[in-house]
Length: 326
Image (spheres, rainbow, N blue to C red):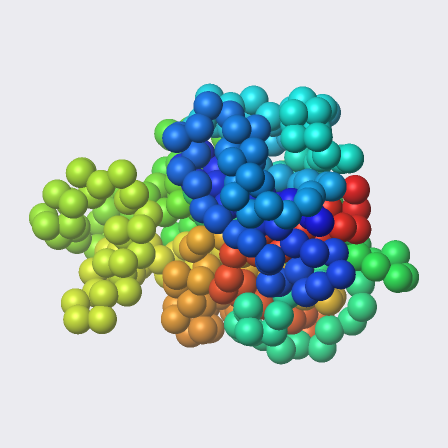
């Protein structure tokens, strides 16, 4: 049996899979409050004692960097080490990987109802790109060796932000005044949405409502509030909607950049928490317009399939790692 985990600062999902059955359907699964446990070992031991299924291999996706078999969570006082986990849990093998890499590993195995297609395109067997705006901006890709796909990590979200129109040029200048380096993550993530909002407000592109200003001052999740206010079916906020439209254009441009970088002619997948929550806006066309806007390569990008992942794929990807890659 295979043990898969999606480890986060707030919650941790654990599941057991059979390598001989559909990995989209775990044999057992449970969510835990991460802060309720002193370490991952004690949580996993409790889970395995409850499910009573024999496990041989494990893979854990971690929301953070993994270096030489060690991972430290930013928002949880845990240090994870492959060797100590293997010993404590009495397993044959344990692997820690970045959570975006687990999403990438899941791509070839996604059920068709797990994603929405923005652009059908004309897929060609080859590389696949994954771009995931959530709290930050994650990127990963897969390569084809003639018989199977292999996932690879990337830190492309930290590459230099390249403005694509006049407003974005002004946005770049605004951010250069506040940050020593302006990456795509500064504008194309949950951290980035408030930066766009503040710029548009300060430069007078749209007025800020007093009610929303009060809510923003109190919330711990400004990006979610901005998105919800932009998509309010009764009274959408103008400033929030302009913020979201700018965000979508930047996301489209960077997704197109990444597709060209790895020649992702077999598809680009949007993952993370934001794309599925703004799907109505992604469908409107601004995203694909920015995605294709690449001069002489516009025709090539028009044929690249683009999909939005609607389900959490981290556990499926971790199970794929445990089965095929360890």
